[in-house]
Image 1: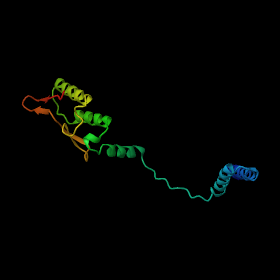
Image 2: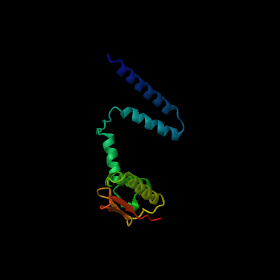
Image 3: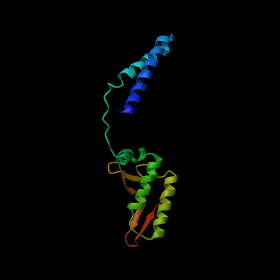
Image 4: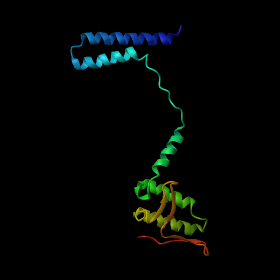
Amino acid sequence: MDFEKYINNLRHDTTLKMFKNMDEICNDEEHSYFIKDYINYMENKHNVKKVNYIQSDVSERLAKVDEIVFRKAWNKLAYEHKRIKIKQYLSTRLLEVDEDNLNEIKVLINKDFENKKLNTSKTITYDPITTLILGIEGLDYDSKENIYTYKSKS
């Protein structure tokens, strides 16, 4: 004998009987409505079909949300999303050059970003389909000297 099922059925029947008794005693229409609604639920809860849940990886769904968030024009992106994309650009798209030069460029670009000089589509070339920064106005690479130069906006 399955005692857990027996106890659950007993609990269900007792609760249902208690609410039916409450409905008979209750004089207040407002409360009576809620009691009848609960009785209806208790009587029909075994007849409800279970919903099929789709199993999926949470990290996959969050990654898709990230893609959607970044698929806007540069001037429509939130401040924090712009910061993420600039950081990504500075860490992945710049060529290997002298560490001092690279740090100097990063500081100048971050300073202009903090001062809101890189908020328009004129200063940042951004592709919302690939969600990548293609270029920053004023950032140039000198292949002869193997350094980056940046004309600060401030």
